[in-house]
Every structure is written in C-alpha cells, then in structure tokens.
Image (cartoon, rainbow, N blue to C red; front, side, top):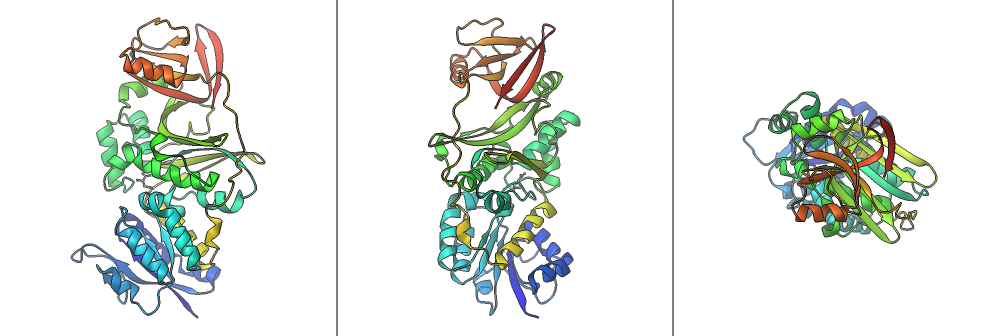
Length: 412
Ligand code: HSE
C-alpha cells in the first residue's frame, strides 16, 4: 500500500494532538484515503525536551532537513507567529507539498498569498483549524454554502475569552484565576494578550470575512476590543438583568462595504449565543436561501484542534482545488441599515436622568449603570466628554421588565 508522508512543524498542544490523532485514527485515515498516513518528521525548538515520538520519525530543529526528505506529501504547521512559519510554508508549497495550518495570525496576514502560490503549484491548503477550533465552519462556508448569499456572520471565536467569562460568572473566579486555568488547560495563546485583548478573534474574523464575502474590511476600520474591562461586579449586575457578556465578532455587508467588529457585548436568553459557555465557540451565519444557521462546538484545546487538522488532511489529500477558497459570494446579499441606527446599550457612570434629545432612557439598573437607546457616536461623545465611563451593546432580542411594563427590543 502506498503511503502519505506528513511532517508536523511544532510539537506544542496542537502538534502533539495531531501526532497522537494520526496514530489513534490510523484505520479511519487509511479507510478514507486508501493509503497509510505516516508521520515522517517533526520540527521542534528544543532538542533537550523528551517527547513521546516513535523511533524512525525524524526529529529536528532544522526545517531544511525536512524539506530534503525523499518523500514528503503534507506539511502540517502548528507553530506561533508569522515568521519563520510563512517562509517554511512557501518552501513546502514550492516543493509540491499540500499544507495545513492552525496559525491564524500568519494566515490572516499571508493567507491570500499562500493560496495563490498553492494554486500555481497545484497543491491544496487546509486552514480549518485557524478558526473556531473543532467546528467545521470553513468547510461549511466554502463547500456547503456556495450559492447562498451570506448577509452576516457572527461568532464567539476565542475559546479562552469565553472560558474566562463563564468561570467569572459561574465559578465566581477572578479574571486572573480564570485566565490561569485557561492556560493550564492549553486553551490560551503563548501570549494570552492575543486572547483577552481580541487580537486572536480579530485574525479569525478576517479569515472568515474572506470566505463569507470574498473580501475583508480595512483592518484599521474594525473596532477591536477584548474582555479586560469586564469586572465581576459588571457580570453580577448584568446577570440580574438576564444578560450575559459574550465576546462576539460580527461581519456584515451593507452596500459595498464590509463592516466588522470584535468586542464584548451583552446577549439575552433569546440570542443563539446565550448558552454558549466555557471553551465552546459558536458561529451564526445568516444567508438568503437557508436563513440562519448556528454551529457550536469546542473552540480550543488539543483534540478539537487536531480534529480540524485531521479532517483537513483528508481534504488536501483528496486534492481539492485550492481556488475554491476565497472566490465565493462577491455578490453577497445586500442588507440595508435598520431603523434609526440606534442601538440598545448598557452604560456605566452616566449621570442619573441625563437628558439629551437623541438619547432614550430605558432603565436605571443600579446606582451607576443604566440601559439606554442611542447611537454609538453619541456614546463615544459621552465618553470623550467624561459623562459616562463605559458601555456595552445589547444585541439580539431582549425583553426587559421595566416599571412592571414589559418592553421588547430586537437589535441585530
Ligand atoms: N487561544 C485560542 C482560543 C486557541 O482560545 O480560542 C484556538 O484558536
């Protein structure tokens, strides 16, 4: 039986998970591909560390040794950072290998270039593991929603942030303790700033945007905020209002413009993400034929990520044409801006009964917090004039019981 030879670059959480899964699912891989999959080499950083890798596998710190192997079919990359990863993957493609990456930062920056190079060398690129861990969202968008015109994609895309928010609410943990736990469980990035300040979710959002809309917004126009301003007190106040903090990436197209944001928002129990807890991720796609679809599953960790890589291994070995990646839905479904542009906001530090013709009070929720209707511009002004100290948008449907009168809000 012929053999598919694989090299794994990096032997951290993801690399090790891929290695173990290739061993544990050998029969399934052989069954689907009709060939045995063998790990031929592993690229590591530190030669002194002991690792559970079979004899006969080349373990090296020198990528050139891997490139010089007599047979090499697939390079799986699970390192962090843009370089030297990008260079390694270019060299692998030029050698005629399919590539698979889990590196969202590198792929957000250089994905288009790698896809073009791969197309020129007639090899494939798998990047399912770059977005939403084990959830097959990339394949869903690029294989199964080819004709649907996508209106909007929303997602909880960072498992660490969602895990921290859940631990703070359910387990009454401090931010620091919850982050430590996420690190121990292998969810967080080497530099967790990327997780908690929204950079990781931002890169994933840019990758999703290219698949959903065929293009991405200008990076500096995207509002990017992390979860570091969310305190246990805020979680407690909002929980009493039936609201939960979720770190949500949102991409939509209005006219010819792609709008995106990555930020903490509040959702009520009717929102599909209200019950998405712990390290789970979720992606909601709204498109014109099917309507609304929500995919949910583990967003980080050794085996969820390995699952995405292993499925990509089958995808690339079946040599799917790489040009199916970013070309779809350039004529994405248009949607008009809704209503008067006012959103529903949870605001902190606004003087009680503060009056302004463009701002509507909905409810004073504590001494220091309230729910109001306003435009984001108005809120930004209140902050710059030091009339308020912070705000979070409430998205989705939300029912509030105000002065014993029920009021319904539906904000996308
Ligand atoms: N640090 C990332 C997360 C890993 O927490 O989502 C998966 O991309």
